[in-house]
Image (cartoon, rainbow, N blue to C red):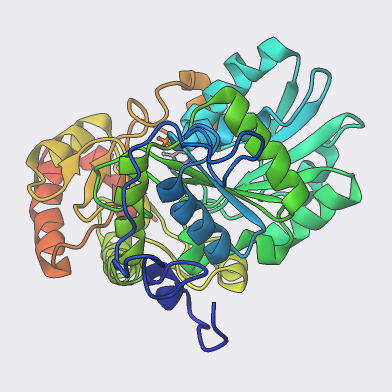
Length: 402
Ligand SMILES: *Cc1c(COP(=O)(O)O)cnc(C)c1O
């Protein structure tokens, strides 16, 4: 891209390589190439494309775009975030070991504990807010340190540069799930990461419409290895969904900034509410990871979590809140309220959930694009219903007790 393009917002909109649309027709949107196979013009030479599992021109547009946005050598688009994540783990071999952040996405937890282990790849979960603990978890056969920051659902912050240095000092690859921040706010490759992963189902597509995953490698060499796995494993993003994702990415800048602004207001409001026990949002100066997050990201994001004193109060809140959908997922134009204990982290045993602070009163809120005053008013009235369920003693469990 030309020298004058210095901002992610511009890169989000204009196609990598050619800023002005399709090189043949000038169409500002890329064509959807619904072709599984490609005519080979000569007996003994292949063209750029042969079969859409190995490569598709529409998919290639989004793959080049995410590589450019993350500042990596190679981008690859998968059928889901989990397809990208599991394919990345298949870079490993039997006998290897991985160190994974303890509050990793529930599906990643399931994959590591119930699929990878069948291939004799061992794992250790560790609290990555504690650098020493993370360093100590690395063994002689550790090949990957897997990070997620801010983490899901308690928004814990990992010091990316520091832990990536530790990983590299121990000859490990550093993988980062960058779903919550997107390339707009955080670029792990610039901080040294070898591989960046996204559930593009979330902010990147942004409209609760498609399931998609993306991976970006720092080097061409690692990119080729992952492309080989993508082609072998076959869980590629279809051309129509690739198109839909390209359209979503174009508006990421405006969506993310607006939702983040609203999330900051909502987090501040919740922090002062008498029955709200804890608020987890890296934008709050009271958040233990606030300073580290500021040093490695340019925004706080649109996801926050908070705790109500009892399960009954939580149920009353959910049943009375009007605007957000109550659902799994996040990162969409509509606000999404979810209950991690039975939704995103249902795959995790209760004992493991409790260790990670995913208790019965925890709610996660992904802030959409509704007017923030409407969202705040909605929260005020739903919290009143929650409050009405509490005994005096239970109310004291809330912040008022401190
Ligand atoms: C949703 C999510 C995933 C999984 O992505 P899918 O597209 O649902 O397969 C991985 N990591 C994080 C942080 C997520 O939020």
